[in-house]
Amino acid sequence: MAYWMRSPLMVWGLGTLGVVILCLGYAGVFQGEIINPGGWGQVWQFIAASAQPDLSPELLRVTGKATLVTLSYAVCGTFLNLLLAIGGGLLSSEVWWLSVFPDRSRGRPPALWLGVRALLAIPRAIHELVWGLFFVNIWGLDPLGAILAIGIPFGAITAKVFADILDETPRQALTVLLNSGVAAPSAFAYSLIPQAFLNLLSYTFYRFECSIRSAAVLGIIGAGGLGYEILLSLQSLQYRQLWTLIDALIILNGLVDFGSAWLRQQLGCPNRMDLTVHAPNRTVGETRSPYLLLPVLLLVPICFWYLHPNVAHLWAPRTGKLLTQIVQASLPPDFSLVPQLLPLSLQTLAMSVPAIAVAALGGLILAFPAAHNLFLPGGILHRSRSGIGGRSGAWGLLLLARMILLLCRAIPAPIWALVILFVFFPGILPGALALGLHNLGILGRLLAEVIENLDQRPLEALQAQGSPPSLLFLYGVLPLTLPRFLAYALYRWEVCMRETVIVGVVGAGGLGQLLTEQLSSFDYRGVVTTLGCLVLLTFSVDWFSGMMRRSLR
Image 1 (cartoon, helix red, strand yellow):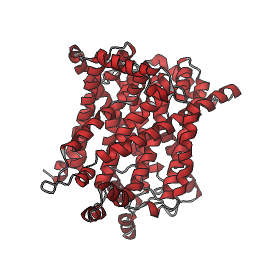
Image 2 (spheres, rainbow, N blue to C red):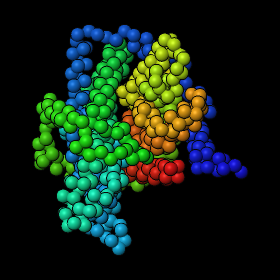
Image 3 (tube, rainbow, N blue to C red):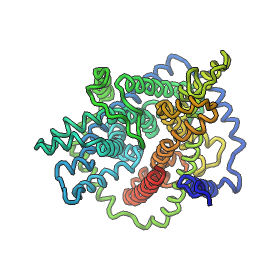
């Protein structure tokens, strides 16, 4: 048998295709009617209203206030996320424990390292919407709940990434300082942290963009902001108002996207996130304009002032009393739900697999025209003889691809699910399509940045040999792009598993729908059991995707 037939990429590719087909069959794609023909009229009204958004002064005032609320939640949540990630990332990094407690006989950190990682894994596996529903049950609609709902799970996620960045940063300078008798905190501050700073900062920017989208999702459960207003307009079928709010959300995401990219370019940061390839190690002193971060930092107190979260809730006696009652009501877990959880777990898995398949395929198709270094004049695949029409077409294709990607990622998955339910009967398929569309926009944008930062030397060598654009793409761009794209797709699969909760809120099925019902009815014993099942399922996907990434390197 030919080697390419036995290669890990081919084996995993065929296996993935088979799993996708099985999941689509489980979702009911190949049996019975899945489309409701009577809903196409609503869809057409929804699309037609996009050309005539409601621009009345009253709605614009509401939209402006909702936009500020969403932005403020994102800023405050990212600030809390960063505070938790700095401590958690340090304590969950292997290099920290090897520096504090050197074990030269085995070269491994103490067991405490694994304990910290396991502790952070639990909040990381629970979606921010679940945290938001939990805090709503304790404090009502106080903004503090939404800030914590973003900060806690994102802090655990960022801590893991920070730990990985620190562990993969070259340690020569750190080793020299430690061998000279310098204490571990000082050695870190003068060697490892400056080298890793730009990578840490770049991922923080990416997490802030994610916070914008999460703030919109939390609005659906009553936290306010654009998500809440969008849900109200959609439920009342006020499509012109809905598009005004959606346009505001798209503009907010676009401005944050552009501002983040500009700041990272000025500071010399690498890509938003880098899962497989190490960026050049630059230090803080090499950044062009570090003072550009000051206006960003000034946003934090302004946003906290604007939201006025009641921080006193954290140490109020009533909070402690309610938490005690919840803990008592949660134990022991309701294990009688296990037979019910098994089919729901299959539904959740069957929702996440087609979702990431749609996101990966769509993101791959749109990422190439969305990259500015391929088809534009001077780009890798640009034909030098193409005239004005060719240049205009390339610019038009780039703008169209970027607008589609921005639209897909700016609209929260639950809103996509509600729109899709106009024409699809309720079930896990609408949830999968909603998650796929939302993650398509994220994956496509990440991959476009990967393409824009490709190593030019292999491509220049192919160009020097007179290779046509088609061969440049097949033998240059595609091989350089695919490994990192597969890593991103597998990473987003883990995220899709967590996000099945948010489409469950609107009735897409799976563990998310059951969890929402349990939280609404204060069934905390059932909540603990369902969350445990969801966490185990998330860890399984995490382990499996990690194994795939390692085998494909």
